[in-house]
Length: 58
Image 1 (cartoon, rainbow, N blue to C red):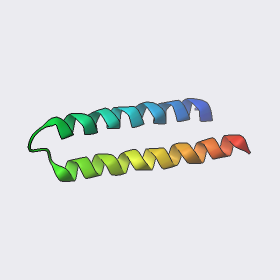
Image 2: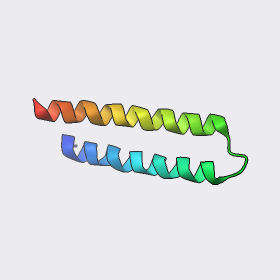
Image 3: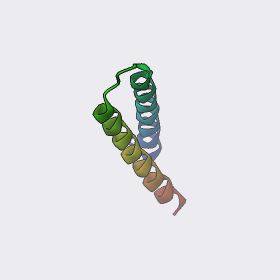
Image 4: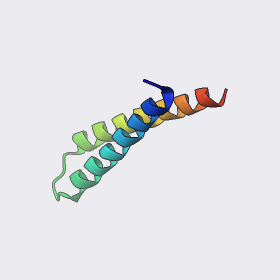
């Protein structure tokens, strides 16, 4: 898998997590632990995307 296709896959997964978080927060009694886990995974993806983008610049 090329770096660009890997980066695109990460961006897509990041967007999916964002949607999952928004859906979860719409529920009156959402699961706070689940939301925190989704946000943690989203942040990990963001860090990985930044790392890959940094590698492309060098």
